[in-house]
Image 1 (cartoon, one colour):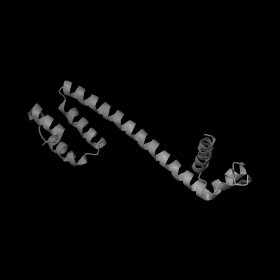
Image 2 (cartoon, one colour):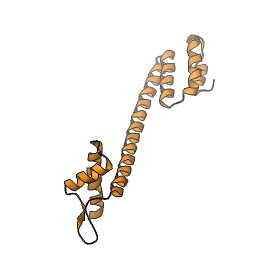
Image 3 (cartoon, helix red, strand yellow):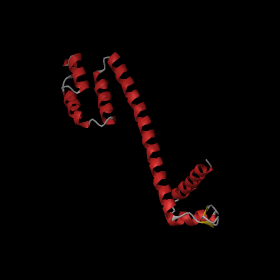
Image 4 (cartoon, one colour):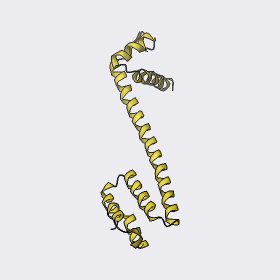
Length: 143
């Protein structure tokens, strides 16, 4: 377990130095100056290898990207829930323009711009002349 903790601690320090804009070689030197070193087989201290720091940086960047992606997914899910609530309220108020606008926003969020053409066509129509079934078909992208 101690070895795993050592790796975690080293990566935290590497990440801190990386965020300050240091190169891999500068990170190796900075860790050595901080006396944060490793031991060779004979028990002598030596600086971390460039390969070790390079591997740490790769893992750190993957972790950062995964964290960012997770936060983006969580934010997108919340936005989608808000849009759906707007649609429910707009349907209840029979406000078809807001319904179509909410659908358009949801499509952008879900990256369904190819269906956006249908919404553009629907906006050009007289919405008061569309039946609920026609609006529902537009909302589902069936038109």
